[in-house]
Image (cartoon, rainbow, N blue to C red):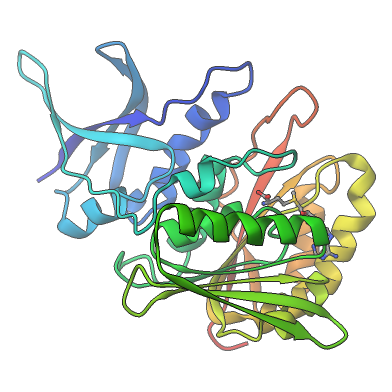
Length: 331
Ligand SMILES: C[S@@+](CC[C@H](N)C(=O)[O-])C[C@H]1O[C@@H](n2cnc3c(N)ncnc32)[C@H](O)[C@@H]1O
């Protein structure tokens, strides 16, 4: 049995540069566990809607449907009945959310990572990991340069635990205040524990009672090189992070990687995966791969679709790239 599908691409406010969603939508499918069974795909317009026509060389399973409910760049999926007349049957996708998605959408600030891109980063890390075959496994996501917490909130919304570090005091204070305010507004019971980490910074640990056991979100203020001590948390399954943009930050990005990675690896499970997003004006893909692979046990994925993720963001950032790195299970 095989199946023809129409995937509706997630609508974006049209700007000169919103094409990246359309560009990366097929890559998300190809990187997913469904990817190996996609025998053909093409861009297609059906009924005036922009999407992908996908031929899957097998039937869809319940697990596939659960997984598709997490896709970032696909808004809905239809089974194509070729007819005539051609008919589209919507697939019953359930978007599993334990907190309202407004948590990551409401706040706007300079330097925020796009929400769809953040969901995509988490999905790519997940798809490359050993945990992708069971969409019900609850994972821990670490962002060691978490800024205003977009990645942490994206993890929480899907019912996963989240851990983040940022050195900017004001950013961390406002992020903690925002999360508290949000949880109060949506009337979700929670506790917040505040701790000092001697000589390194501070940590706020939220226990959010929307699931059983409750969700954990720890946000620490301090240097990313102290991630392990600052968070003092169980090891994460997935690490996703978005580096500072701009050609002037080349030295900073190299420093963050060389000092950060040893600490990040202490906080990441063996077999875990990393997704790094950066502006190619700071470092080339080859340079970043060389740096990362200098650490034992890390391997950058550089075959299709993993090497086809570079995309333009705006007039200035023409090449934002995404590197997916797997950690072996022994080192
Ligand atoms: C591109 S921003 C991340 C944005 C974030 N994903 C968001 O949506 O808000 C990079 C972040 O790295 C942080 N950063 C830079 N150097 C750092 C360091 N040494 N330790 C911890 N955080 C650092 C900055 O404060 C900034 O918030």
